[in-house]
Length: 432
Image 1: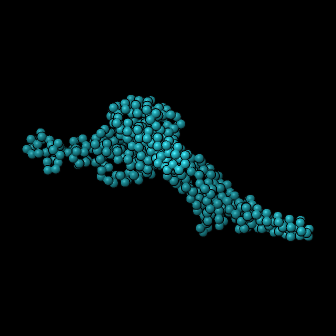
Image 2 (image 1 turned 120 degrees about the horizontal axis):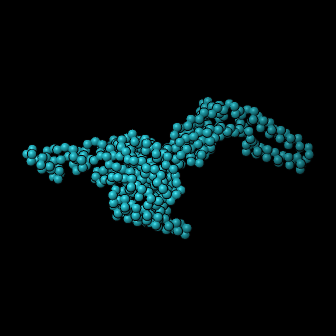
Image 3 (image 1 turned 135 degrees about the vertical axis):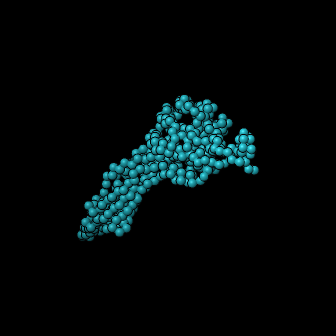
């Protein structure tokens, strides 16, 4: 129980009355004593008639898990609360801090939702819940500390995978490789013969079968299944930098999980490979949607690293582990042409045997800074440096494209869509 600012101001207001008794006349001391006694009585009244702590009941409902890039509510229900109560939660550093909230009860209970916004994967914790309210006169306030000790696992955002999967698989073109496709020229696996009609591709004519049946017959193909897709995830220190509120590594994991789900649904085999200064994990490519849960568990355990990425070691090890031609999706980041030199050399070797899709996240703030109007000399310097980084980034992307590496360099909100579209294009064109 502590005095409020209003209580302090009330007693400060009695100082002029005390000075009046000391300067004007000693007989006015009774006026000062009366003011002081009245202030004490008001504080005592406020303390007695305020809502006691034992009457305040607190119930906390926490979500089972948190998803990176999403928010879940921590529901606090307060029974027997005063007309106005302040609520503040003490959260772990990997959760976005929340401001002090003022809650007014509706009926006999007050209900407040504290948004839990995870900033990194791992284990988040709600340490303590603080409640504070004042008496009817606002002179004395009570503070209650409610220990919580709630641990919440933070995992990759599977909600986005489910929503995107429902949206994508409702369209027919996204089922290529899972269902038999009747589009002439798409796919490479033989499906059946059909009688030729004007408009079909002449290159699909099967002359031996046509001679045997004495009529023109065309071959129909279906999209090939059982491709091998390996997602190589860079977990080095550059991927730990935040972008749109969460680390680049988590943007890459979310996009990679969605791509993995689509690959498994279309009949392909998916494996994951994580690395930084050394190889961290490798999952052999396997098919079937049942493999998605294992991939999810593996990516949930991916740790943030502060080490420098060793592309030579990682890509050499990956090439040695892959025994057949695969689609290698490299999710990484770089700064300039100097730091990307070894990466490009090793990607050139990998691309001789495999189809490589290079995916990196572009920071929109860097482009905005490069095009910012230089109002001051400091702004001009920042714009020049940012423009140089953007130029060197474009140089690296163009060099990789000339090597035959497919590239995606987009902001975080576009990486999932562009990655899926490029994968479907690879399947349609039978590039693997």
